[in-house]
Amino acid sequence: MLKDLEIQRLKEILFEAGSLVMEIYAEDFSVEYKEDHSPLTQADLAANDFLCTKLQELYPHIPIISEESAQIPYIQRKEWEYYWCIDPIDGTKEFVDKNGEFTINVALMQKSAPIFSLVYAPVFGDLYYAIKGVGAYKQNKEQKQPQKLSSKKEQNKECIALISRSRHTAITQEFIDALLGCREDVSNQAVGSSLKFCMMAEGEGDIYPKFALTMEWDTAAAHLILQESGGEIFVHDESLSPCEYFGEKTKGLTPLQYNKEDLSNPNFIAVSVRA
Figure (tube, helix red, strand yellow):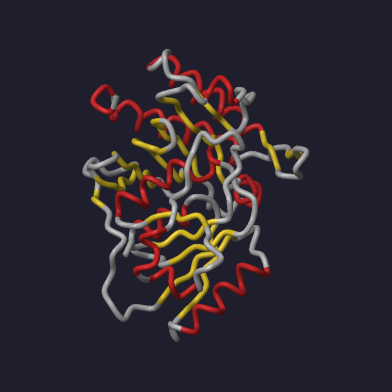
């Protein structure tokens, strides 16, 4: 499947979706709220329609799971070999607040894992993408040559714990505070959307604990970018202390899995470097 991807065209589609979203971003747009109280804007719907249309034109045989599209019953999708998992705007709260920290996420999945993905941050013009077994890359809209990413950074650098800008919980802060038991130089940085994973892929963050609801489309695309740069997203294991997520014990942990019957993610811990 990977050899059949038209990667340059897929990049262009993300850039085009970003331009569409930025036109709405510059206006005074209305905001509705879904049953779970999460915001929904016309940009979410416009980007969803655009992405689904373009992907279906290119790959009519590959089904799509999207946050803004009707969900397909598990009895049907569990048989899929390949499918697209998309979030037309990840970080709608950041879009509404106009702080720039939102992304457009597209991942090609094979059964329970991503094999190709793109994450685009339209305000910054930064496109992140990854190919399973090949690597993760960053490319600015104005650049032709992508930069290969590595999450590894120099030793003795400050430990940066990333947190959600809009949904930082008390249990998350307890986890970060506990890191002081093994690291004296821990600092917090609040960031919206999948940009947290992309920052980790660039070596600009060390750990991201998440103890609040997320869905598969929130993480699928950025998961592969983090994996291919050297990191991982693990299902949270209560038997491990926060400090142990930097050590050998992570070798026995389970990464996030996809196309589950329940499309919500369990609590997870993302780390920039696997043991």
